[in-house]
Every structure is written in C-alpha cells, then in structure tokens.
Image 1: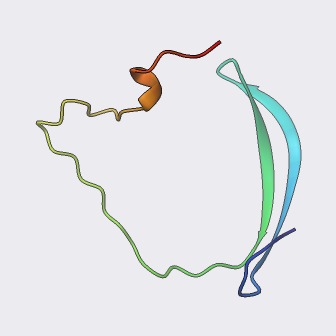
Image 2 (image 1 turned 30 degrees about the vertical axis):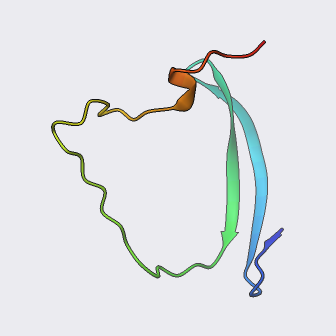
Length: 64
C-alpha cells in the first residue's frame, strides 16, 4: 500500500515476473484513484543534436 501525505492510497502488487526483449520485468497491478491536475506538451526542435535524449552515462565511464 502506498500512501500520500494528504491521505491518498494506492494498492500495488506484482502479479507476474516476465522477460521482455532480454530484460527482466514485472507486471504490476495498481488500484486507486487519481485526478488530472494539469497537462504538459513536450516539443522537439528539429535542430536538436540529441533527438533521442541524453544520459550522463552516455559520456561518463561505468565504474566497476
């Protein structure tokens, strides 16, 4: 059970463990109520040098 500071509640369970595209994953079951309080539109500039996104791990070496 997940609870918020204002009393909201979500019941969460893992219903199954699966593998997708060679990676382990779960199938969650989430029950609760929510309200939309706003929306956001993300736009991409066609001149963006990283249209697929950027992660720090793309440039920093992985520590071992």
